[in-house]
Length: 162
Image (tube, rainbow, N blue to C red; front, side, top):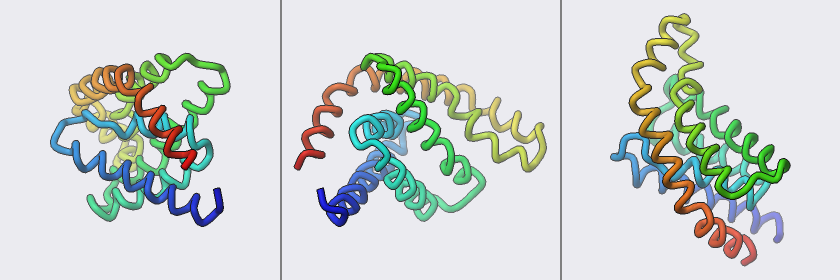
């Protein structure tokens, strides 16, 4: 694939990620972004970083560049890094569903880190207030990951060959 075509494809993958996030915004912490980051990492490799940069900028433009946005600078690359590590270790497909679940459970804690600027109490309060959402996030990520992992992976592999 030529460099120009690869950049264009990565832009489209970022747009898909953003569209999926926006289309499910009305569902509290039920999302496809985590699964897609995992699959992009597995299928597209290091290209996922360009996609995540574009996605994060789109999130800031659309929702505003608040304190929450700072966490998006590291939270999605952390998921991609954990996925790459699991791939190197030879994890089974269902293992990525578990990763997505654990990521959902820890999402609020990871997102609370920028609130340390207001002191440990601010971070702790922000994290604790979101625990019910993290529970929904983790369980829904598990179900989505186990059900949609293989079909979407096949589609991504096919599309990446075109």
